[in-house]
Length: 178
Image (cartoon, rainbow, N blue to C red; front, side, top):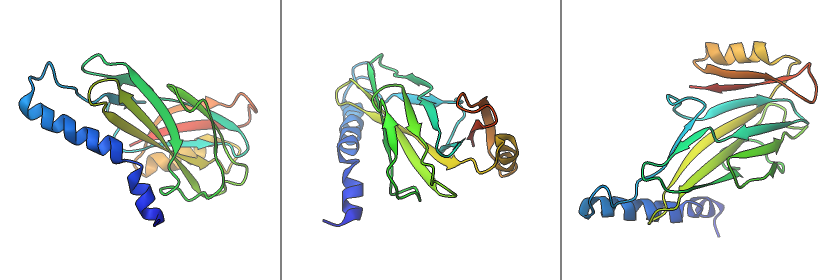
């Protein structure tokens, strides 16, 4: 089968559930219809992907941030690599890909390529509805994250956090968002 068709089929269940929910909204009272969860991420104003800069060969822990469901449904989180969007073709290892946090082993050969990671938050309502948050992982190519973070900020990004690495205090990671 065509690889681009396989990429689209990944989303079919969520798309069909979304369509069913929207049809339900037309005929079901608001209190009885299911509504999608909201992934608030590092900032409630965050729109678009979150950029994460990390040390090649190290690991970084990612968090879903705050997730709310307007109906009070239980939310299941799943992390996965979105290879079609990124430029890194190698294998990427995620630990604990089910849950609100995951740890990513940053490939030592990442170089100037990117890894796109997705968080899928699916509620337990009927039909189950899913919302996504995309994180773009880039390699930190200098011994300090601050100068690189400043370049992102100049390009319109907003610095969310800077955190020293526990593996090597000379290195740090920066989380940025639009």
